[in-house]
Length: 295
Image 1: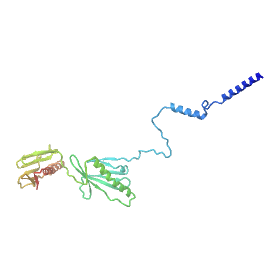
Image 2: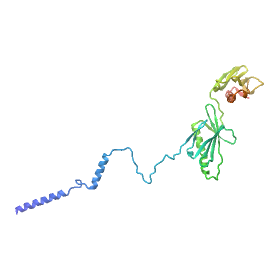
Image 3: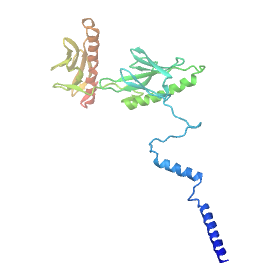
Image 4: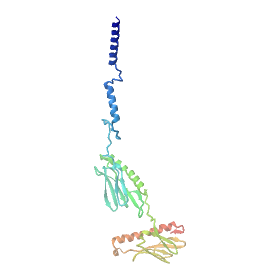
């Protein structure tokens, strides 16, 4: 009986031991899902890092394209670089239709309708004054021609919107240059040479310093280019000349000489005329002097 009890206890112990071996905890025997998570984490830890983030592309993802971005076009002219509005890109073209006066025409690329034209130093009264471009050696007056649009045209609204872009063009012109809108500004030379006399000092554009001579005498100053007489500034009472005013009791007159066109080239004649026109600079400076009384 005693031996039977011992064998019975041994049997119970063996059965309990086997049961413990078969019932391991979840932490000791991971299931397939746990293995997957562990393997994924290990791969993430060992994978090389990248500075590029790849976004998923779906049917709603929009990738911006630079192919059709509007560009401002720079148009070089003898007077200024004109910046065409971005709205014109590929839709409104331009061409030079005249060299004298220099005319830049903008037109619809599809139907050829003129949108507007810029006319530099034009003289046509039918043109609309845009303003004056202030330069170092000369000022440029810019006019514009804005034709009436055909309201029956299928492009009427489109062309009308292009005409409104004129304000954008003017804004860029004002930003890039010294541009005075809606006014004609006479050019005044910033640099002049001074001709000293016993009566007064005369100012004449320095750009003619090498070409124009000024002979001073008691009666006045004679301006000439070589053997070609240009004009005289006369002091006192003279029968000749045009009286422009009085300086401290002395009458001041200007006498313009006729230039023989047949005795010089077309280019020389044009230059002589410009030298004579610059006698106005003398008057501009005189009028700044409080002692000068305009006639």
